[in-house]
Length: 370
Image (tube, rainbow, N blue to C red; front, side, top):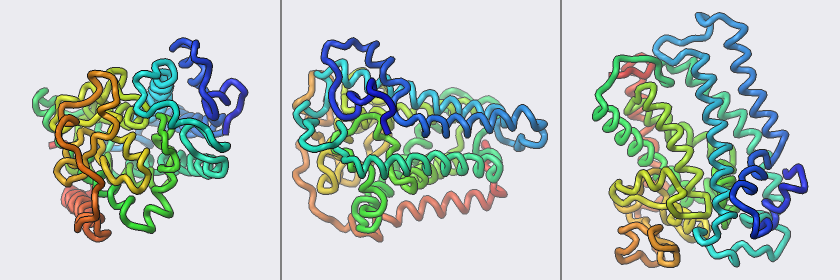
């Protein structure tokens, strides 16, 4: 999927060690597939074109943000994802001392990329990237027009403490559903083989790997994550914007290959109980399917509650990267438990979905700010 010689060194080899941070940043910003970038631009242009050509009363949905703001929201997510991905990869290449895995782990013994994927796997991922782009675009449109209020419009102002509590509640609901779905993707053989193993082809993840999954993996994440959480614990307009941007930061960081103060979202959330840093999720990738630890997104409390927390390479990191919880006695190799039974793993996801569906039905299939 690489389109220029300048980008090849970031795909299949390390760039020159004496390059500065800014050089990495400028070189990485427009790397990758130009075809996929064109597809992303086309979807966004179609939204802005519709908002220009059609009257607002034809597009705006009562209770939701105006269609023009919806367009700006999706544009902002795309820009933030691209810019922050580039920032994190620049940190990875420019500051080796903060890497979660030693450079020898990235050594290329075969024709693979820096993350450990062979050419056939890269081709498959590229195909799923395109389907992900289109399916996510369709899902966002369906939620905007089909579930009024999901993308919240202007509402009566909330007190700051209420907004903070709602944000925490929303994120813990999001992470609870995604914890169990993620765990199920590992322990249900069909889900692992047909869907989630695509993401784990990257044994040495970089931030570029974050959304490089089977398209159904990304689709389910969007529904079980922000989808169910916004229905069950609705956020107001500005908090909704913040939540989605913060989640992009957090997702990219835990695949970044570095664990340090440069990880802005993880640094902010370190005060949360049992908070994790990127080295926890990196260990999850490094161990492949046999390392069924650290399934949590946001925070980390569910890994502690359900016995899947692992410090990983915390002891090998520079001072300040390990959390205070990493100093606790670490789990050995985790054996199977009743919680790994396929039915048990899938049940919490179904339960959260049922509760969200019942709440939508009660509220007339709209998300109400209360």
